[in-house]
Length: 416
Image 1: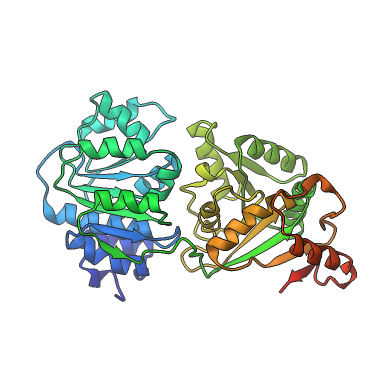
Image 2: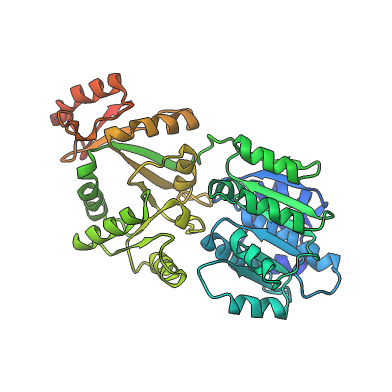
């Protein structure tokens, strides 16, 4: 399809898309929208940044407008998201698409007072975007009724399972009408996700199911071998010397996020941390400051970073590799969005090489390897030795470390 008009979306939706500057549907949108408009259950694989929110939101809004559901203050559509940030982002996007309609969208999630949410539910909503935990709380308090739900959408279903929401999802499904259309979106499809999907869906149309090893071609992926003790100064040097104005840095723990942000501030780099222990207000401020250019670096954990949607984010840094290889795909997908180019840099100490092996096995290719002059690894120091190292690779690296004088442009390659 060359245009949104050709997809037979409702005219108020087309008007909103024009206002928003949407020119043409992305591949996932072109495939998913007709199937959803036809009333089919959908199983869709879509990496972040492919336009998946619009892929389910646009036909949903069209069906709500044209289907004229029975009058009810209870939601007709339920969208489940794994995190507060993603729920808020999805709701905001839908509100933009529905700007020329009277359809009401509400996001409910934990970490904030329930009162404004329950007040809004009392007024009535058409589309409810929710995290599983807060949704169950509202149901148990009899503040929410799901009997009118005709559409169920799971966004980033793989992440919901990673976060341990399987039991909550099972309980929620039992409370929903059996006569409904279900849309299931996930970036990756391990067995647990497939099992959940097929237990929920009725003869689904499978659309662009992305393999777990799919990474965006628009992202340049670079690996720096570096000792743990050199990671922080190396990051500060890269940000400063490269004049990076917007970089998302991933770490594994909340403490590491706070500690690294504190150290970078001492280096004169404006930054903030983003993790689950921060209040919703603090998280929102950090995100706004990052998007608006008030800070240059945002240090985030994997869970907190879900929902960060910055179209032209140029840099992502894996300060620490994730324990789950599939999280690598999610992380680097924060850059290179909507056809823009991006660069993902990974710092890897020797005690992380087993994690690197898992990532390379998942994406089915080696990651380009480079060293920064002045931050080369010290192979005589056992502090970073890996329990599952790659001996041959280390020997090649050690030999090439002696060839430092051959480095060009500030870096030298250790593997072609």
